[in-house]
Image 1 (cartoon, rainbow, N blue to C red):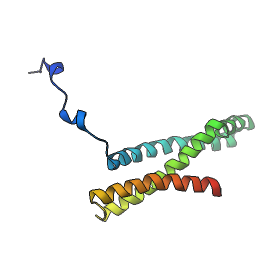
Image 2: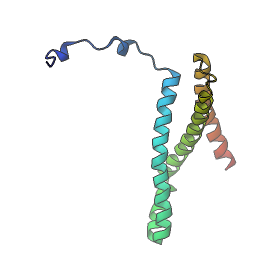
Image 3: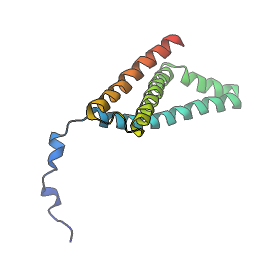
Length: 127
């Protein structure tokens, strides 16, 4: 039978005491960057298709991707690529069952976060 007092029950106690952890946040961020990179790939495909279609279509697509908004999207995409790459390397390390201790796993998470920012800045400076 259905519970009619469903709204009167207290919430789970973990909701009020849960503290986000580096490992869980980096895992979520890996999924977010993966999906965001799909959208970036679609933008790049749109740019190529516009270039193959007509000068007007290319001018519109190129105008969007070279605007301040397009530059912001591309820089964030670069950050996402570096982060996603480093997170993939982290998972390859974990696949060998190395660095699975909490402190080492947290260290790898911070390496992914800080490393992706550093590599993004270096890429922008070099390129």
